[in-house]
Length: 419
Ligand code: PLP
Image 1 (cartoon, rainbow, N blue to C red):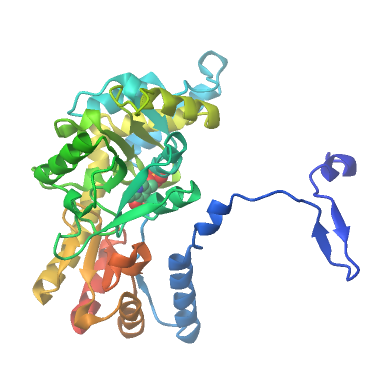
Image 2: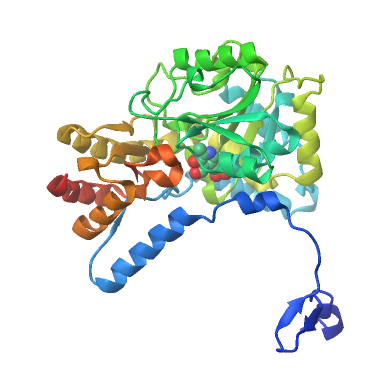
């Protein structure tokens, strides 16, 4: 070992010993109290603990996991080839590259621009290591605004705003609005930062053009900003559903769009995404949101690696899209199986068609956790209780299509016996 005691010591926090011999750190710094507003990730730890207990009590029983929120199919061959070629370029003097440009390599931004049917310029696209980071970090450039978030939804919107000290107004999804909350649910006309997720995680519900136009009109009328998360746009199968908010007239004046290679190209472990911040967006004092976002990113983030950006570019090539969509088709086939069963049983659900998620009403008035235990104990299927995504998720349950076809088939056979 080259590390000497003197060097390694620099990394220890000095401590005082109390009379009892217990070591107490000397630190006397204050923590960001806003972080104490965040609940521990209760949902997935509670699921894991109940599954662990069940497996310990029933060691030979085979569980089927329909709660997987991560993709499972491997990267498309054309993506892997591009990554390997780029990695080799990094190993040669003539083609080595250091820090990438602050908002992403032009070749990738061009591929993203070409992917949009709407008019977006290269300067408006900022490449990142994924949608989660961008969603979590956008609060950095925003002040103390009213914040409106649908319920149920991807928990990062709520948590990142709580961490920033913001107060949140939730607008509920329900069977009445097809789990697509609308602007008439917002009280008052104060300008707000509004989060929209379409297709939504966990409900799989997606806004149509008319609904999205209502949101854009509302935002323009009230001077609000929409943060539009289109991470699941590749799953949209219906021709009349928009893939991007910029397909709606007026969106350039009120919306930022966050998107990802995670679900489209299976990049959950490879990490790449982007955010579009139109040049037209200005805060109340005239500050450009685009400039602020690039300032934020170039201060706190040093970019996505060259091989990953080349891989992402390849995913958006003609052949890349063909190969990635083959994987999406595989998941869609799983979702269709589950949807057919629920249709047959007359159980209300959203999603499944334009999304990898199926959001079903728990049968017989069961609560989310009650249904979780029922499925686990009776048919050994693991899903996700809806209330873990927000209060409005109580009484609902999320099933995903990210498993294998064979397991999804088996799960449907088992579900058929108890629903
Ligand atoms: N947005 C939504 C709605 C998600 O469900 C997820 C991940 O599950 C993300 C964003 C995260 O995307 P990324 O992997 O690009 O960080």
